Image (cartoon, rainbow, N blue to C red; front, side, top):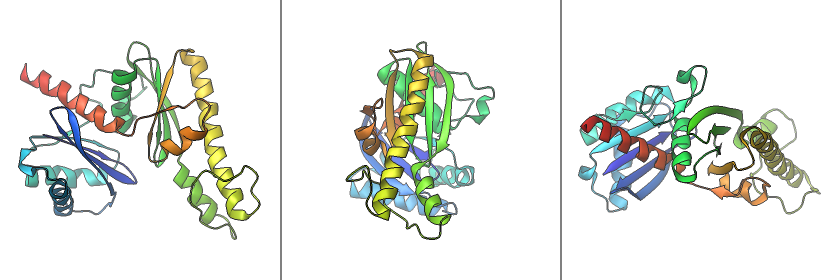
Length: 259
């Protein structure tokens, strides 16, 4: 069984794969000072609730954009699973040629998403990941990671409005009942929702001009389904894109190590 972990700034997404199929998926809050034992106990309890055998895990792969947690994740893998985790970085064989000026700068999650998107949808393709930041990653027809666009995430915008104004409340991000708000909360929700959609559609329109009219687009991340409901260009949602990308990279590297 393969254990895949995507360590993000807000959440840690965990997936368990058996015979190539996803048999368990969980999401934990990212806690910067979390210990290896805390992570191990949490995963052990999740496995127990899902009736999965912890001892069956024979491989762990990790994409992380939170370096302070890497040591805890690595120690957890060795202590609770008696294996060494594979951390995806610029040296990992992913099958994608990285077109960034400095490949070290590309977040592991962005590369992993691109691997899965190209495998599932072909190229050219754009992945829109709605996480702490909103990222757009472009993959060519030939499977080359071209680079992308990074924007503030929706949660950051919500928190900034509350923190930087004297009278605006902290609101839930949701699709508003109507475009023109008739109260403060409704006006904020309309601005946040349609502002995010307008930004995403505007960037996608420009990316399609560069990549060509046959370009596919796919959304992943916490707010993906809500955004896709109102987007002109973004129609496909793949909630497990990152986990699937981790599985594909694990399989590729396992085969290369066995040859």
